[in-house]
Image (tube, rainbow, N blue to C red):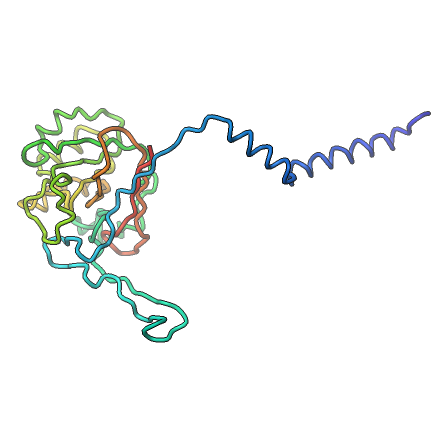
Length: 263
């Protein structure tokens, strides 16, 4: 029996079309089979570590001036006010808890030029990060301390775990001026001798209490992103991937951020 070429072509086209439909809309049986196959494959488990402090009412505030006792306040309540839903407001200083500093924090020219939190580069806020442990060092983060670390060129993000963490300063309501921070010389050495674009630390200021301006200016004049008050209790020295996402606050020189490490 002879088959008309046109009929054969139509039949082949129809079969191919059905195969494409099967690929685009796989059956439940096909999906189940794929899931079983994936389950037998070796999957490398990732560890997610939240390095953000909860916005607790007893969280210390910088200088002790702006406590978080009433940061979250219920404006309308279902039980209290017989409303159809609960409705709260958030009111706090932008440098509260785990937060970022934008260049306009200490450089007024940048502030007036619009270098705010909303404009911070996500390419810097997300990516590989080097975590260094200087918690056993006596004193602040100085040029001498940094020279011993030998941070290699090419590293763009670094987080410092200092004595602030074992001292649990972020769990004490009172602001502690004896926290560990950068000296001006230490900050200047870091920006001059490394490729760092983001620096993180485990208390409310990257700069020492005795000189708040010098270290901040050294970092922010180069438009480095500063992340302060990180929760590093369960973090060890080494390499990880940082995801630090601040709120998109326009005209704000700082802002709260949710930061996590994935390793």
